Length: 112
Image 1 (cartoon, rainbow, N blue to C red):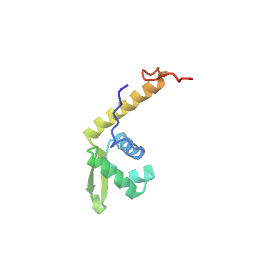
Image 2: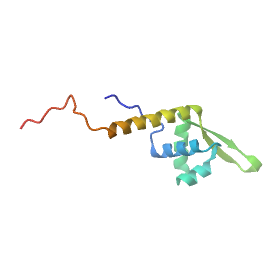
Image 3: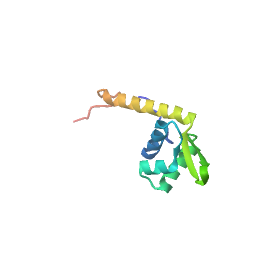
Image 4: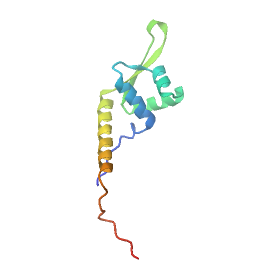
């Protein structure tokens, strides 16, 4: 059996939740909305967002409409593609787990 490739940048419960929220929204999502929806501290969220941004999966923009600064995040086209590959890998793993176990070529009966 070959190994199923898992994207290490995405493969974290928190990062996957962030990407799912960004993917579900057509418009960029404010940092505060992500923090509140995911129930994360600002520092924790920021560290995950930085890792995702360094990996090319998300981008951000700091803006100040009407004088109130805000930071918004969105998933990049590369992030979209990587998320689809990740979802495919999970489907492949699920398919393997749904099949009955097969005898291993390397398995030997125990000597009694």
